[in-house]
Length: 194
Image (cartoon, rainbow, N blue to C red):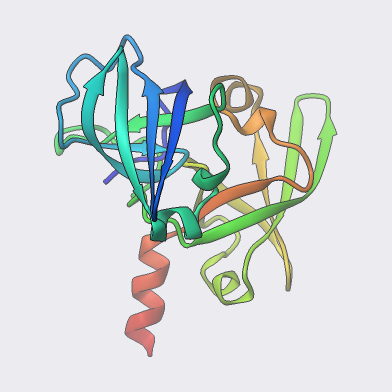
């Protein structure tokens, strides 16, 4: 479980392609000294398990399902990624409950930029739109955000300059893909309603 508060951006060292599997190597951030083999780290919002440490890097196995369902399939050496360690039970939750189980890849439809104001309008598969409500939560590439305007086929999120500076979101362009995880609570509420 994560909070959607990205701790640091990291760099992909290598991507080794095997049959139905990628081995992703990410340079180990200095602050991540407590990470052990088997720990979970959210990489661009995708919960991955540390399988080994070599050459100053974390190594993760990305299964076919992960590659099919997320933007991680597009990573290359040098790519920037958002990183967050799994939350501790006694930690403050600054964002919202994020599982790291990406619902779908979304597309940045449009970016509106004004002084000290950036708005992204995003599209997602139609079946996910029911989980997006104004003032609700959504994780985009692992970043916990508040949903703004919601229309029939797109929704908006807004960014303060700090978020754009400390995450990879500021590197994204219109037409780019992002990992989307809708609010866990919305899923359970709608499931309970039948």
